Every structure is written in structure tokens, then in C-alpha cells.
Amino acid sequence: MSKVKIKFTETRVVDDEYKGTPDQTVFIEGKTYTLEDTSAQHWLSRGAAVQVGASRPKKPKPPKPDPDKTDKDKDDENKDDTVETGDGDGDGDGQTTQ
Image 1 (cartoon, helix red, strand yellow):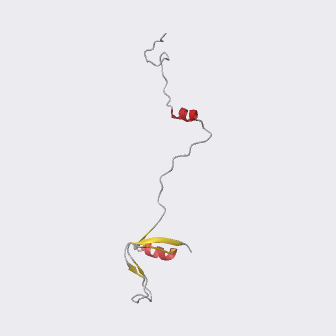
Image 2 (tube, one colour):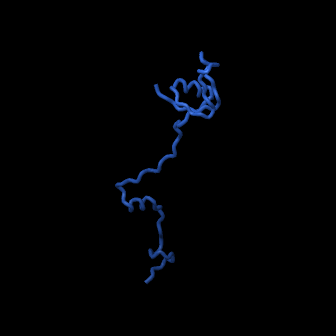
Image 3 (tube, one colour):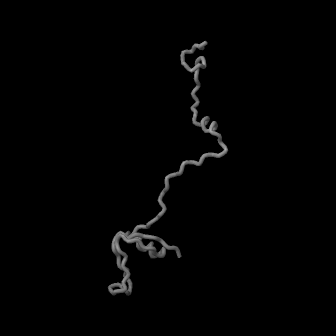
């Protein structure tokens, strides 16, 4: 059987033949216990405990860099498709400088 770690949200006494005796089982509010799965589910279903270490949605990790791509490939991917017009000297005046 698998074990489950739970934290009690309220103090609970197990209702068995030991209840009311020095041997009774008590789960204290705020304390964490590792129980067999069926016992843990018993307390979880009653709202007396919450599971500890339950899997939470993780933030997606950024993709790992592709070792086959060069820095130029990466730069090309980041460029937009803007087409510059003009004389090609980059000053925007449409006239070639000599």
C-alpha cells in the first residue's frame, strides 16, 4: 500500500475501541502525518485534513536551446519581415550618398 502525507486542519480522535482511553489515537490540528492511502483518504474526504506535497501545476519551463542552431539562426528567427525601401544607405532620404 502507498503512503500519503496529510496535514490535519482540525484535531480529530479516531472512533475505535481505544477512544476515551489513554491509548486513543489523536490527530492534532496543524500537524503532518504519513498514513496509508485508505486512512488518508478517509480524513481528506471529511475535510479534516489536506494533502501535503500534492502535485501542483508547475510553471512551464522555457524550451531548451537547440544545440544544432547557430546564433545566426536564432537572430534570423527574431527578425521581423519588414522590408526597407530607399537607397540602401539607411538614412531614409532615398538618395545615394557619394
